[in-house]
Image 1 (cartoon, rainbow, N blue to C red):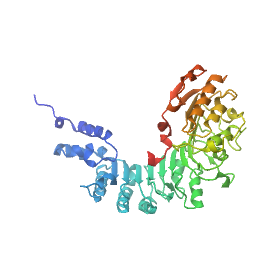
Image 2 (cartoon, rainbow, N blue to C red):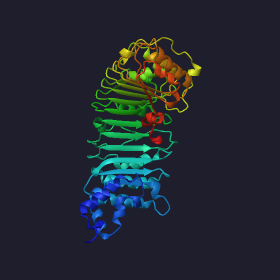
Image 3 (cartoon, rainbow, N blue to C red):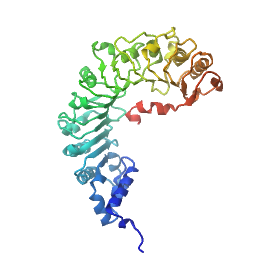
Image 4 (spheres, helix red, strand yellow):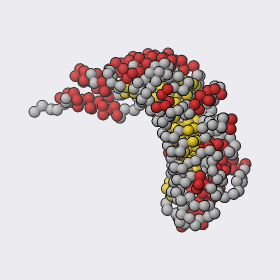
Amino acid sequence: MSALTILSLPNELLIAIAAAGQEDTRSHSPTAQKSEWILSRLCRRLRNTVVGAPTLWTNIEGSRDYFNTPGHRVRRSGEILRLYLHRSIPLNVAVSLRIVAGVDSETLADWIIQVAAEINRVESLSVVLASAQNEFTEEFAPLRCLAAPNLLHLEIANISTTSRQRCPLELFSAGAPKLSCVRMYGFFPSPVPPWVSTLTHLKIENESRQLFHTSADRRIYLSLIRTQPISLVHLHLDISMNFNTLPTDYQIHIPSLEFFAVHVDDTEGQEYLRDIMDFVDCPALTELVVIGSHGDQFLLVLNMSRFPRVSFPVLRALSLINLDEDGCSCEQDMPHPIRTISSHATPLFPALSSLAIINHCFTPQLVKEIMGPEALPWPSLRTLTLCPSENISGVRSAVGDAVRQSPQSIPILRLSPALLFPSDWVEGPLDAIEVVDLEEVVKPFSGYWRA
């Protein structure tokens, strides 16, 4: 009885083995480590089988990270991209291009030209570069006027930590009728493309260090989310501007929107958070994340009877996040921003079940407002997350007082490890305490360059 070898397996199983190996391959790894390359070099039988299986060549990665290492020529990256595009015919492909080890406009231009030639087959396109300059938008010119009939996912990012400008970028002006998810970092689409109306997920990140070229660019940036009709469900947006300077009718009006995360200017005054929230006219919104706000701004909101123009009838989760690892020193400069106890928070957020306050100043007073002995009940609130980096002892004391003295039911507390002392908190009417990892909480909102 002859021994069973891999060459005795049918072609279908050999292809399945190669496909399984692709699932474990690290993204942007050298071609020498990819299963389709390894198997295609073992013998003629495997080579013919693997090369003749288009499904094994549809996940296309080009990376300057490794093609520029010793033993590899940069130009080889274009050859390998061309090979993958040819071997994957007639199937649709996912293309991921990455140049972060020194930006090479010639390499990027070659890649984009090849992708443009096969754009009808591209389902997913990701281009990541690291450039301190803004000259590389011209390398995207071959994609400017094209239609992308099968494109579902688009990601364009400049992850340079020294870039100071947000770049307008024109892509697929002839349409991308299936495009549903777009993520841009350091760029924003301009002029407003026709495919904005089909998006369900839009994520534009820029970090506060990146500026608009002109006020006209700022208006175009906001026009992305004011295009009608629009069907966004998930919106993650970096807006750092004074809302008082906008026309009174300038709002985000998206009836379908359920999730909204917004980066704001953390140097603005006490009314800024109110203005941000009043900017979001989205009656179906269930989760709101504000990055860059301050505790005194939220205290002002809690003492409002209503928002001037909007309401949040179904908002279930509200997260206020300060990404500064050192916290905020506002509390030391302004120890008593608002002395009154909240009386209108429940009408403002009637369905709120989860509230997160991360690295905010005035957290002890917020705790008092929300769950202290004189606070009004929040009947829907089930979970309160607290992760302070300043005045930890003050927050711990405020929580302890609330647990021991409040006549109302205390929500489940999700606390950073620094707050888990003393243990006598559990003597009050407390349902549960959970430990929360601050890094995991902020990771989805901490920017592309930190990902």
